[in-house]
Image (cartoon, rainbow, N blue to C red):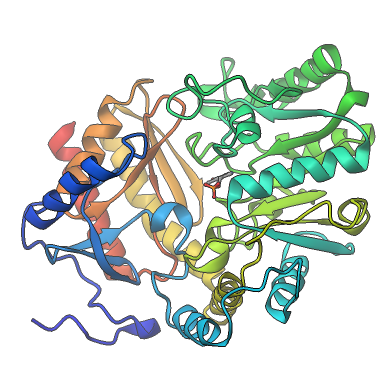
Length: 448
Ligand SMILES: *Cc1c(COP(=O)(O)O)cnc(C)c1O
């Protein structure tokens, strides 16, 4: 058995699917019994195949099955799992020092990540960044900063939004189950407006952007008062909400209106950022330059790191000591981020995401043409999804389960749980991508 071969990008696991047992296999099932006995059951698992090693687009489980990864740990390992530059940078950093707390005795790596973020995010205005541990923490801080700068308190979020699981971010997140159910009361001063969701817009796609914009401004004016709103927060493509790409022009209108009303626009690019959609940030596709942008997931090649990047005058409005946290911008996570960003630049992973789209999109469109149950195919770059017409999770869950059994990691999403979403690592090879699509096609054939 030789699986330690060197592949393109220095990947050290052969990039092909191998099934040695059923998935999950016996060793995974043993571990899962231990999980059930030791881990709080509120922490669920999508596919309880326990992973031993992973590289590129393959995750090897403890039974030796090689699974194709169309999830990237929810859009995190965009540069591939244990990407060579990330591994090297982390190993070097962990030997130098592991932690000092940037708020106590700082270090260059944090500053370098901030510089890269300021340079890569949309807009050529002066920017500042602050680093945190998780996406939810970044969103919380973006809200703190927006309130502090504007002196206003209200925040507007959209239908189908997902911004995290902490108290404030649960309030911003739209969906009750599983994120909010019985976890209230939630943070106050959060208001919700309709999202321009073309596939489900009552009067159709053509009218979606204008009508949703009208409904948004009416909601804000009538129910909140524009002068009370600190910020509007939006995912330029909604993630957990089902890869909803807002109707063309909607976000630009929202951005212009916010600017006119003195409201800050926060783009939550935690899932869409770092080449995922074929550009560094999805805001660029929408022609918007957000005042504040939150990032996490793809930023650090698998290590926990998050950021708020924004206009210098907004970010610097907060008093010294007002932002921070013990671990925020941990040096190992920063070293990983610098290596991940180097990888994205050197290997042009934005182009790789567009190439993935050019291969996947026709295959997904063909499935939609073949099966009436498929209502919509959408997304950008390597962030693609199919939505089943029926607003219930049955079909998406069944197709996902069939994929899992066949060794393909896929995720579901959507307000109704009826979306299959695909987030392959951007370094995935064409053969593996095609094989994954073959597995999906067979799973659809099995279920539909
Ligand atoms: C995942 C996600 C978050 C929350 O990030 P965590 O690191 O899980 O706290 C927030 N916003 C969006 C758009 C996300 O996809």
